[in-house]
Image (cartoon, rainbow, N blue to C red; front, side):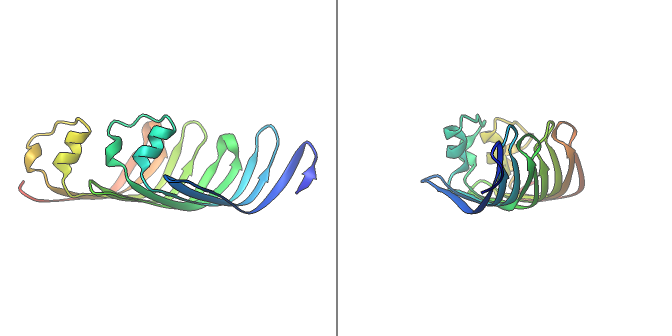
Length: 169
């Protein structure tokens, strides 16, 4: 503990939270005050992301699709404009797997700058679970996609898109 009494700096070796649904940790500094400032690293593992979303009151169209999520990275900046960099995140589940490597800015609007991959072993079933109708849905099998994401979430740009389909179509 150091700094001013009105805005002390906390040096945290490791702060951890563990529950049935998730394990998370943070190591770094926190400058307390009206708008706390963080500078450190995080690690999070969610056993069932759909259940975590429900517990946090986040509505997902198909929470049963979201399973094991792991993420690591760096947090830096004021809480209302937090920047996450060096992110390495992954999702593993029976319906899809995905990875994201890059950065996320949490100021309004949220921004992304990174690379994403996704693999859907039964893409037609996945679309159906999200209530998306596509032509030939029963014949759509495995889809793999990779792309770069860049910009604000409201006008996100995708580039370097690599899409592969295997199956009946």
